[in-house]
Amino acid sequence: FFAMSTLEMDLAENELIDYADRIAGRWEDNARVREFLEEMSQRKRLAIGQPAPDFESLTLDNKRVRLSDFRGKYTLVDFWASWCVPCRRENPNIVRQYHAYKDKGFTVLGVSLDGNPGSWMRAIQEDHLEWTQVSDLREWGSEVVGLYRIRAIPTSYLVDPEGIIIAKNLRGRELEAFLKKTLD
View 1 (cartoon, rainbow, N blue to C red):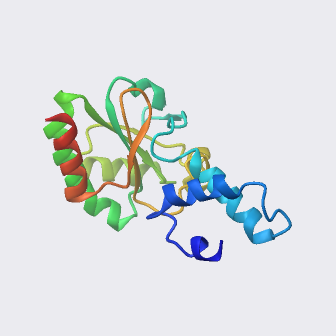
View 2 (cartoon, rainbow, N blue to C red; view 1 turned 120 degrees about the vertical axis):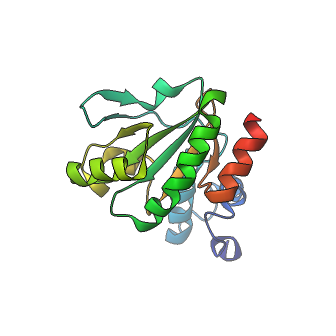
């Protein structure tokens, strides 16, 4: 257990989830094991191969949008904010990929962790983000942040046309290569 619990969660997620399934019911009197099993239970529902949890949020013009509205397309659910420098640095790449693949079944759903609608709107315009953007303007207190267990941004989930998570945190060339392999 100790050796497994030292692995990097994001890099060894599938192995850790499988391990948690194998040890469930053992060492129940150990608080660290219980915490590990709870963490893996939460991660399992957001693992590659699982259905992406549906959520609803509002666009800049207060229209309600659900993730399930994007079924039928490969959708990058991109968690970002106007104040996030790494997010803003990645936006030009996402814009490039969006333009290259939007007619081949790819789209983006931007989920902002902004609290200020003015800053959010300016960033969308400055970065030329043409896809659907949503936010409840509650920053880290947003329900979708809790639902997707967002701990840092940028964070992204790539969801297939049936609503299944097929990749996480693809950026730069990794995103480009994945889309090229999948959609070309």
